Figure (cartoon, rainbow, N blue to C red):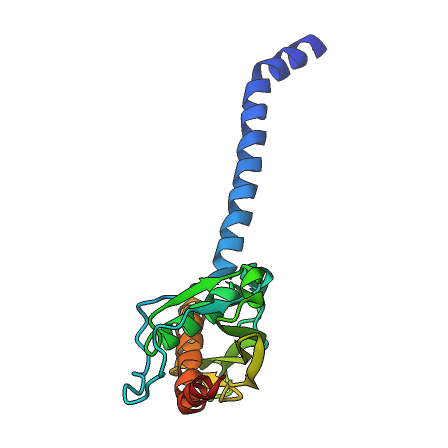
Length: 226
């Protein structure tokens, strides 16, 4: 009897091995799908429409060499969970350095024609115009006006600290973020995937608005620099 059982077990061994491998594959696949479904990526997009700049403003020395400097550590991707209870099963991969550098270059290229973005600290020892944006305290979330989480507004909050140097002298140092929270349009929340995809364009437009609101102050500062 035992010989028959052992023979059957031996015959079914390949099947058991296949089933074991298949279950392991299925488990890994399910975990992978769950992780993919919970994490989104916020990408800086040069083509995102933003508010137009004031073309009546002008920097006197438009050809002066200008560097947009952002520390290389700021270009490390961060995975950030929302600050709201709504959507707390989500997370966002974001590179704050790309948003800071990209938005700064996009704004100042309207007034300066010789701009380079860099992470090279050596430029800080030059007499060129150095623009140093740094985004800190970035948070985002979803606010439900109806109180029952059927619909929600995505929002972002952050500090945009901007320093400007000329001839190695600090000529500007200010947090230019304008709003405590920057909201998007109210939408049906559902799984939340659609709303979390709105975080990047909301963030990008908010930064552009910060620069536009301080445009006169920034350009006057650069023009007065010795």
